[in-house]
Length: 243
Image 1 (tube, rainbow, N blue to C red):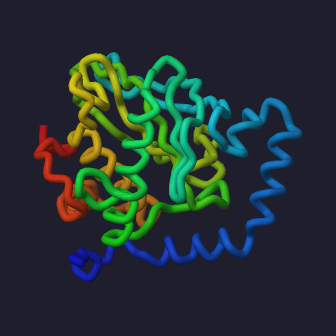
Image 2: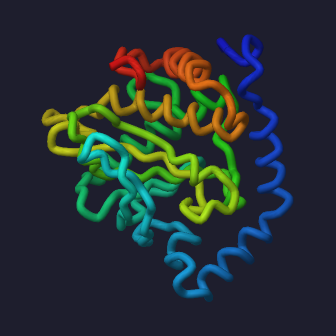
């Protein structure tokens, strides 16, 4: 397996190891926290703390309808729970059962001969961080970014979500993925968009790098994440920063 870790010290697999150990040792804290959040109305929707198919949650997200990133709230429903992720879909977005399975597989186990996004990025720059919720799984939210320029942004993460106790965060690590009539996650023939998956892999790398070293220069993170995305098998040329 090709790895880029030895060539750059900015990303570090130690946080992934440390957080995995934290999850194992302090699982009881997560259960207690879930109970507290359930009993305290107004803190967070109860189902956000115990994700399961059919559970509802309101996420803080971004809207790109003006060209820049504006803060919005998105109501979404959990549609799939995997080994490494919780897949939520905005309530105004429709994906079929087979599409949900295919998209989850692309992240979790691999798709169309490609390595799984989770493992492809994790094995090269470190696995997804666990900063806030004592849960190693990543939340994935599919929603319409309302891009002013179609396809300008197809995936992102919010630094607030991977900063401990940030009042503007979701208190969980979230990857956001776009779908719209102009840039659908699945095209008219039903094919899953490789371009979306490339962006998603890149954003997962960005999130991991941000937690490892928030002060790292943007061009370094961009270079590393383009390389990691390519090595993970996603060859779309439309990586963030290339437009």
